[in-house]
Image 1 (cartoon, rainbow, N blue to C red):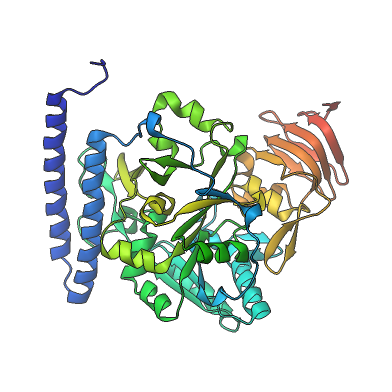
Image 2 (image 1 turned 135 degrees about the vertical axis):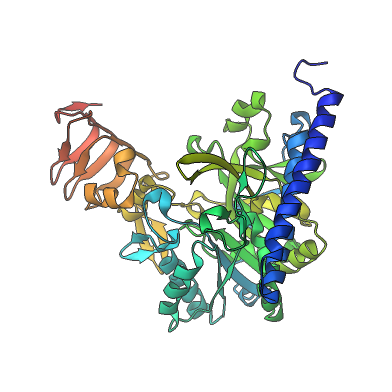
Length: 494
């Protein structure tokens, strides 16, 4: 026996511990449910806590047995299971009446130093992520004289702000509907008990359980039945911050022609995407392999761009009737992602766990599910201010709410790495008030206290390093090409 293998007594101990933890959690949840006075609210809260308890029980089981996959059973998908976008050719607009679009809108802009929903961060010409999404769908509806609705899945963190924001689109040719994903209790890492004591406890005690909650939330909110009554068959889902995720008629038609219940858009992996999930064949099914499921000794192999050549963009095309069938039969068991955080309780910092799921992991439960390898232009996320620099720059032109790479650009987008001084949008705007021209840039690294002037051009590889206690001002009109700029503004050929 391997020295790392678990003994029978260890399994017995873990199973007993899991049973006790489940029992204690169930009692704590029941106590919270009993404390809800109004019957309608109580029924809704009870249903939500029951769903959470199912997730918690699965977490305990997975924790005991582990969630890594058997590496020997992982195989590459067939050509039918991962299709090239170049083979799709039907661009007819006749199926648009069967389509609805959903943006995942539960995230806050805190990682970029903003307050409120991330979707309202300004990204281009005074317009936010949400503005651009609305413009895209509105243009589609006008151009093809159709009625594609836009759905926003909010969280309890973003819902109030979003309700105010969407009012400004009332005169636009677009129907916007919003619904909330679930609100689950955070769990103390040590005791495995819920952080909140009552249903009214502070919002910091709760969390939205990841976008894998999409399916359950669609059904429980009534939005799924509403869409089906309207004759909608396909839901195109994407992250709210992916500016490349536009409606694609080729993929829509391909899905309906093949009868696939689920299509995941993949794109070619670069060295910047080594942690992204990828499609594999496992036990006869197509499924998503995430880095957390990879045995430690095989992580370098997983990150290799040779073995796994593409990754999940989280642009998903999903059959609505299939969602109804799978949710009602309780068949959507997605891999659980334990997300560890810390919260302040008095003067102490306590570790908590959030049990989350991702909607990409649901692919293995749908019939005919497969991937389509799409151009990189359909994956344009803005996660950091480094990404923000690119989408604001001359690298892209704005056309009907869609960012289109300038035709004079050769190759893909440059690699940009801005240091910690640029982490927050406010600091980014102070340091780069005027976007430099980057159409000929390959690589930019900036660290330290650096400020950019007006009309700057960056070409080739540019590295700007400012040491602690110093400041660099890049003068107006500078052209930096293949250079290293240091604290005393000396410029060397690179």
